[in-house]
View 1: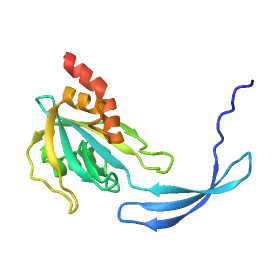
View 2 (view 1 turned 60 degrees about the vertical axis):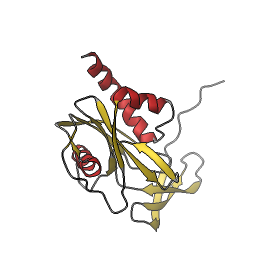
View 3 (view 1 turned 90 degrees about the vertical axis):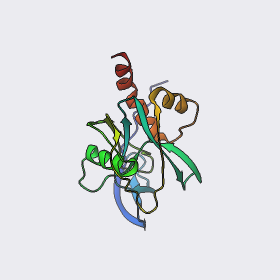
Length: 189
């Protein structure tokens, strides 16, 4: 049996906005398969980029936020994060979101990596930022619909909680995955 061919790149024929909301647009995008010559409509969420922050305190604890999430109709334990403003640097956005949501600020910040939240229906990216030496220094600046319980837990407890299903937000798990080699080096050193 011959090996399968690589997948084809579909040709984008055009798009229209089907719905406009306060946080994203829904686009109808028409694509044509190059081999079969068939065209179909697909729906894509057009959202700005996001940022999520691993904030490590001097005592090697992570800053977490617990909040109500409308999509799951329940509470979610997460790391601070939010929408990146147009033209804003992801690291600067991470520092801003950390400060606004938790009142924490750190001495050093850097990008751990970037992921596509759901490439099947979204084209935006979520940037994952590490802020070190995070300490509570500022007043909270929550948006009108934001309300958090702010807590810190030792890093190893956060990983145990994630492995036990206590953290289910996929982007938070991505951030923990990218932070793991940094944490392993810090533990040794």
